[in-house]
Every structure is written in structure tokens, then in C-alpha cells.
Length: 448
Image (cartoon, rainbow, N blue to C red; front, side, top):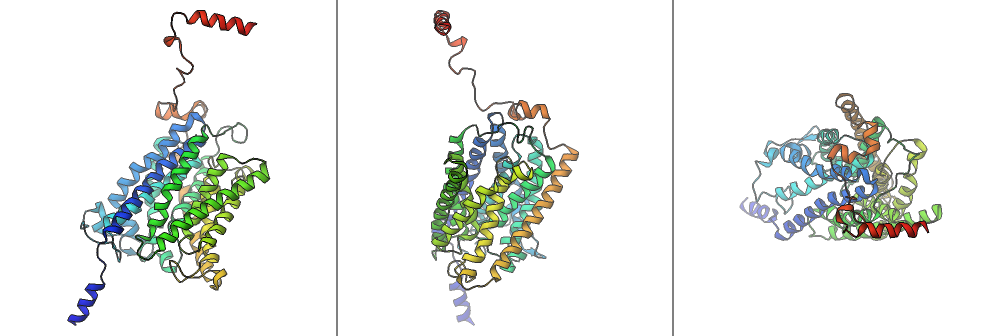
């Protein structure tokens, strides 16, 4: 008996300084993704809405962080209750956790796992905001975010990643959030916009991005932070799986960007910067659930398929008449569905698990599991999000007035503008006494 106890003690995980440091860095990278998303979305809207778009992402860093500490971590990763939700009193307020207490079966502290998962919880409602640009009251958005993470994100995170969660136990593969993050957010976005309606001037007025450099900056920050998002989800790299995921993240994103640009060139005749940025994000979304189960060649295929299909999907809003302002449905919902389902084809059975896809002799079993995960999360998030939006719209009102939307939501909701044009080109206060002479001379030249 003593020998058996000694063996068990020797096999028990011990705190790894390397893995702990690695996961803290990954957590910081994922945190950076939310400001990156803010820039990405902020550049895509018209100038009169850019600050509001930035704030709709930034506020998530405040709201979700506090809720996660108070009860979110407990709901998502506490002791399972009925396969649908978790709860552990020790996790409430993160008050009952020892500073060296290890996360279940891993070599990192519970605190490190909690803060890493917090950053996932923060960015998910921020993703939804891109579909609602130009027209939602900031107070209503803040309350919606708090309610949504409580009744949608925390439970779904438990389903997918929590020990005892029903999708986890079913064997659905979601390495870093294809269902829990991207399908969840994309379906929620669709549910909300079906309730609150279209922007004033949708399909009539030009609604072009006001700053493509900001879009590219945001996409670059997202791509950079996504390495922490994906590679960090293995919670260490003792066996090389995290390294495979890192490589697959890069190659799938590259393939998706190229596929999107190729589609644009053939369909519209141009290679656009917005297309490059959007294609990259589509690839990042698609590889998130699948990159831990496929080879780099499989990642190229997944990325290329996602880039092509998402490029086609973003135009569906004009055909079906739903106003998905910044293509959250077309990129995150569609990309998440593609990446999650393609696990059933491209899983090699030799990376994160022994589950193999159709192309590697595994038959249709894993594809069936993936489909259950995809459509259950999609349906739950779509319906509950629409109900939340409906209730808020009928009580406090979700939308600003039409006049406020036309004049600009930044001034109405934040009393600010993104850019100060008052001094552009010089103003009267900055001119010298000789300015009228130069102005008169200029006027004569124009008349001539």
C-alpha cells in the first residue's frame, strides 16, 4: 500500500513554472485581442460611429471581468450539475482557491486557468457588437452584455469545456472556441439584429469603412493575439500539441486570406485591404476549433474553404435583408460552423486525440458529433439572444432614435467625436495678421 501511495504521489502533476509563464503570456495575448477587435470594428464603421464601436468592445473588459470573478467562472467550470451548468462555491469571487492550487490534472494554477478563460469570455460578447453598429443605445448594450454572458456564454462554455458538460462528454472537439465563442457570438448577433432591425439607409446609403488602416491594424492585432488564443488552449506544451496548433493557426489564416482575395478578384475585379483583413479573420475563426486535430495540410484546406465560403456568405445579408453591419454572421457564424464541421473530415487521429475524421478512416461518427455541437449551440444562442433583445427593447429600448442615428451615435451616446477637424488646414485663430492678404490673393487666383 505504501508503495502504491508513493507511485501515485510521483505521478501527480506538479506546478510548472514554464507552463505557468507560457499561459500568463497567452492570457495577455488574448486580452490584446479585444482592443484589436475594437480597432478592426472601429475602422469599418462610418466616422460618426467609430467611438461607439470602440466602446462596445472595451466595455466588455469591464463588465465581463467582474461577472467572471463573482460567479462566471463557477458557472462555467465549477462542479457539473445535470450536464448543463457548473457551480462551486470555492470559485465564487475566486475566494476559495489556493495560490498554488493546480487546475484539474494540469501543471498550472487554477488562477492562471481562470484568467485565461476570462479573456475568452470578454471577447465573445464584443464579437456580437459588430453586427449592431450605428444604432444601439450604449446603456442597453452594456446590460445586454451582462445578461448574455450570464445566460448564454457561461452555460455554453460549460457544455463544451467543463468536466461533465454534455457536449464535452459527447466527444465534440472544440480546441479553442469554434462553438463556444464564434458560433455562439454569430448566432447571437443574428438573433439580435432580427429583433432590432436595420440601420437607417441600409442598402440605400453608402456605409463604407472610414479608416481602412485602422481595420488592418485591428486585423494584425487579432492575428497576433490569436496565437495565444489557440496555442494556449492546450494549457501547456509538454507534448507538442500547442506547437502544432500554433503552426496550423498561421497557415490556415494565410490560406483563408488568399482564398478571399482570389474570390474578390474574380467576382469584383479588385484585391481589397478589407478583403485581406476579413479573409484573415475568417481563417482564424475556422482553425480555432479544428487546428488541434488536423495536419498543416489539413489546416491549409480548412482555411481556404473558410475564406472562400465566408467571402460568399457576407453578401447574403443583402439577399435576405438582415443588416449584419460588419459581417459577424458571415464571418464568425459561418466560419465557426465550417471549422467545427470540417473536424469531422480532417481530424487525423494523431494530434490532440485519437478521434479520426472521414478522410482518415474514421467514418462519419465524429462528423455527427460535431454537427450536434454546432447546431445545438447555434439554436440556443439564437433563440435566447433574440428573447433578451426583445425584452430589453420593450422595456428600456435597444435603439437610439432615427434622428440620433443619422446625426451620429458618437455625439449622442458619448459626447465626443473620433477626430477633431476644427483645426484642419488652419483656422482663423491660428492665422497671422497677414492671413486676409493671402486669402484675397488666393481668391483672385481662383477667380482667374
